[in-house]
Image (cartoon, rainbow, N blue to C red; front, side):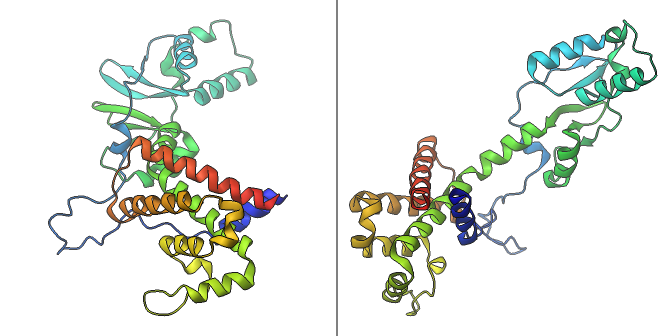
Length: 287
């Protein structure tokens, strides 16, 4: 129950992360602004490995063997050079259930051609399509086919979608959890009275003091921690190390949020470690 409570408090204290689009794109936009983040169906296709297919006249047992071996839930069905749709585990089970209800499940069921099992609700999408417009369909049906029947390119699934968004949102979520964990820890260690006093001392650029810890920028939060080290040392332990970590993290945040810069694998690993550390401190306080 305490873990649930602290998680709720962390979420309540949370702030919405900056938009993926860090600049307004207008007719008079600076020429150096060459792109902005707009997710298309084609963005998923670029990262996909070669796709397995099944010919329409092959027995359904062959499709099932492929699907089980590759851990796929669907396969594009090819007739000649044309993609005529996809066969899915759901479409196979649907036909099997219907045949069983009629008492028609014969021994040759697994020998029937794949074309009989094609999912009639297959949706086609183009690489330039807005990806977000297909998300609800994929959530319900599990996949879309890319291209056209005569010029098809690939098939994307819910797994591809989840993997794609994980790669693009992971660092934002990690940074958010670090920041909310720090705010939670500082607020709970200092207590309301000491926190108000610390906030009064910490003047913002305009000359006024922040009214609550949520009003602080990340660097102001770092300053608050360093400036009240005597009270916070019991949980953060090493002042120089914490100050160095948060200073480096501030630089990473600026690169990611304001300049949309890519980070290295080593930097992502470092962020993961900090997130686990500071989130762990928050949960320790809740025990």
